[in-house]
Length: 263
Image (cartoon, rainbow, N blue to C red; front, side):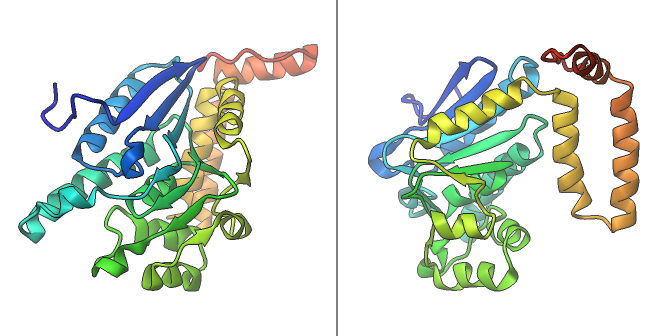
């Protein structure tokens, strides 16, 4: 067993009809994220990336929180900035890995999503929120700032003044405000079932086209418009030669549901 993995798993991995459902499970501590969480998230992504039958990811939290952020008790054991940097490096690595994974991901935010928990949600492709969800980066109150890409992803997903307000005040944002800014896709009373329903729809989609859509949006945002258009043209042309494109058009003509295989 990995030395960083708690004998009692703090991340549960379940396969549900082609969906990889990951549940942060440290409810008594609002699903605080420590080194053991990071190790198990890496392990889950190892499985997801090697299994073509897993076509969507749903991440949620046990109890009344998605995640209240990094495990402060672990941070308190660090004796230097180097110790903290090593932890942040590992945390950023797993979030970056999730963000770049070909498999589309959905955060089902069932309560508080603060600090590193908010950053985990930001690394997902889609975010659904319960009405009582709250999003925030309170690190400023500890004399710190988000260190797992929070400052950068927030600045890309929100107007700069809004991102700065969150970062500089540590004040939380309501689910309704997050929806208004487009930070979450929808609000649902039963957020996990809604996320699983959305994931089930993705499972039936064409995997290569879904991965391409994710890549075009993410990579294109770092390019000039002309470069992004060229990438789109090249990508869509490659999709035209796939079996899934042939199946999609054949199903449309025959007025039946397509069966995509990822080929």
